Length: 408
Image (cartoon, rainbow, N blue to C red; front, side):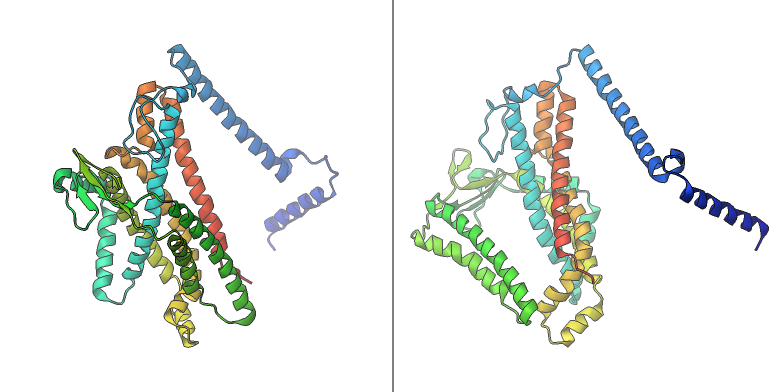
């Protein structure tokens, strides 16, 4: 053994022996890795705290010097501006705080509906991309390439222009089917008239979902013990659809519809969806679905062909192969990037301000312009989107753990 290497090994062994025989408290803290790590963390935390203190104190000093009001007391003041769409009662006489709540709910509405339809469309496109049919596969590939290469903001402008440039005014609204009207003011369609049965139908639907959840757990345990499969899907569909239908029949099967009618220059009755909301939803769904399709395709392709062939060789039908073999393994690959796409859709909804949809960013900008409290407004925007993002991530992480395969 070379002399230099022998000296290094001897020095290392001597240091280790010294550390083992040293009395507690006699070892200098800079030689103890655990204490050293704690000291570094305290130092970094102190530096971050001092930097934050400096920024906050300097900002407050400059605001006070220029006589600019700070704080969130403006929440109680009258907003004095209208909001075109609202899920809760709102008027110009309402407070700024209520206006911001309206904007947050509008953003949440777009994000929730957009995520649901994006996952459905993305899954269909991802499966179509892997289709053995040449035409279906190529059409899906063309859609994915085109939608991914066009910026989402341009897509929002395109769909917004479609409504205002191609559709007529409400007086000449298109009526492709009875109770449905298309015009440059949006889409108006008929809905069932308010009836006490509807409340109980929703309650029956919730009860049915709870029963289906318990049924699935029972069927899984039964299969693990006996090996016998239970037709969960068919029974679940019967419960989810049957309970509300029975409730509807029990209340006399109300059939009255609230049909939109042209009154003056606009429609009254039914539900009218604004062109801004439709353009925003279409742009976000069609754009994000192209990325979700690639995520789904990659997840399915991550499952080796041998897995499917082995499942079919023991007599499993194609639906069972997908449900029992392909999906449980593909979801491990799909869920993490799918979470990122859901977050991207939620954050991209802030582009709604470009086409006039009153989302949280739009309402917050109006509030900032009227109150002059930009720091508070921007802080609220960041906080709201942070809450939405963290909530989505927490739910998807929980779901990811639920579907994760347990390895032995």
